[in-house]
Image (cartoon, rainbow, N blue to C red):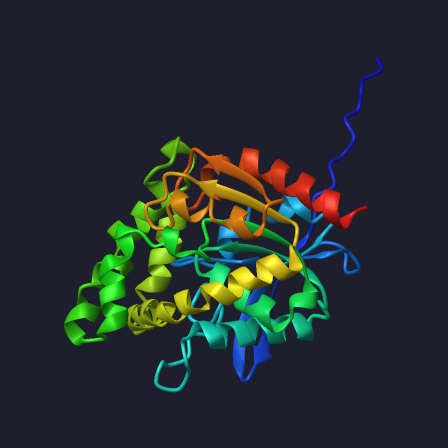
Length: 298
């Protein structure tokens, strides 16, 4: 009896690698053809390239996908803060050197949360290298710094021990779980592995202080917003905005101002929260794939 045979589905191979930059082992995930357009995935707090684990296989058939972990996050080294500057400027330099080492002289960027100022700082250094932008709950406008940021702004203004201690709850399990579950349309879609993995790394001795250092240094990003916006206006990179509207950290008001400087941007407001890829991958992956195909595979 003849039986129909379903063709095998090609599953992209993902490699898990590290590279030494100034003696620090920087971990990254890489997949896809070596000669394909590059997509650089820049993660947020408090996670790592782990946040892109489900997206990478859906794009790696036709893109070279590179997703690093910043020092102190994921599988990258966590050097002592007394000997290593945990700043957005330093992280940008590390990501820059990673792209050079991997021969990525042009790239698209998916930026989220902390990944947004890192990606936009990288764009200011090398505007000619940026081919497209995918923005997911990542800020470049003061409208996005809502009430959640008030105690953090107080810490920027006065880096006292009291103001620092007031932010200690941001590195607890309750807050990590909150970031993954609050505002999600279907919490049953969210794997508990997310907050278990992230919290295990946050709980390493010394890591909480690293995160508080980073929260303080985030205050160096809003003064750069006018420069980020000038980059958008001058270079007009094709941009896709996919934004979880229920995110209390980077709320929806931070999404719409992009259209002032990028009027041709494609904007999608999703019924999701902070880590929208966790419950809206089925919507976001086709949007991202179609967007990249349109602009990179012509």
